[in-house]
Amino acid sequence: MKELTTDPLTNMWISFFAMGLMFISVIVTIITKEKAKGILRYILLTFSFICLVVAGIIVFFTVFAGPTE
Image (cartoon, rainbow, N blue to C red; front, top):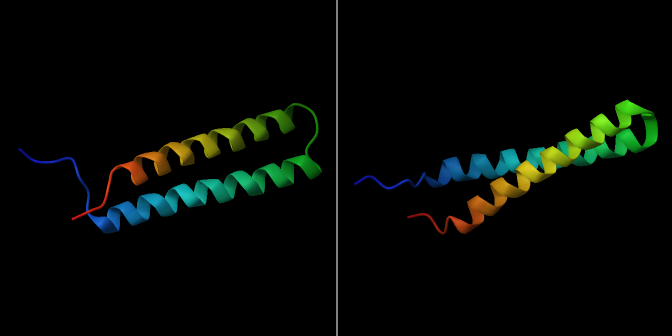
């Protein structure tokens, strides 16, 4: 039966994607805190939080998937 593992290069790109989401989250939060007002502020902060949560889930599964062959 085929295992559900991926090659190390794919794991690297997935982790880079997660780091990119974290970076986007930080940048959106900084810009939002300084520039945005009203409902737009809450929408952008919610988007930032969602990016951070998705990145955390990706990192969790990447790290706990174990070492590659």
